Length: 157
Image 1 (cartoon, rainbow, N blue to C red):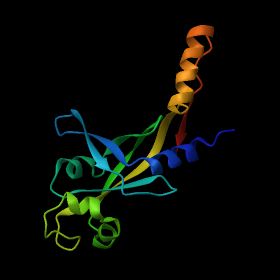
Image 2 (cartoon, rainbow, N blue to C red):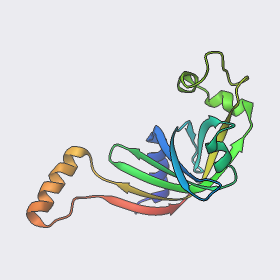
Image 3 (cartoon, one colour):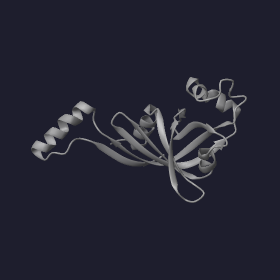
Image 4 (cartoon, rainbow, N blue to C red):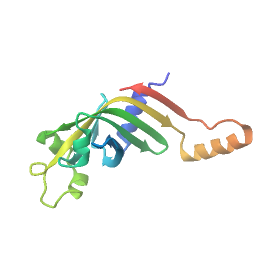
């Protein structure tokens, strides 16, 4: 039996970027890309965002969704956002990628950036074989009515 929860956690850990979807004050859904900084076994996913930006404002204590992918695997994680004003955690997550998107003299100690943690609650995933195997499966499906191999599932985090 497949452990869907661990499958999702492993996929999220391999994903470098996520699309964070929030609702604006007017109720419109909007997505933006974020760099995944850390993923815990409990399903918490950490990001660094501008403290005065829309992502921080719209995600804090709100329902959010993350879209993630790696190779031919995809996940949609629903959860609750939380803004952390935790300089120690920010310093732990801060790296060359964060620095590249920051002002030259900006550091974890003198930034308006904050940590956004999404507490994953439920997830759905889709897992297809590698691209060569998928190509063979598609061809076989066209010739034999046999569907290409894939896996999907839903789980609580």
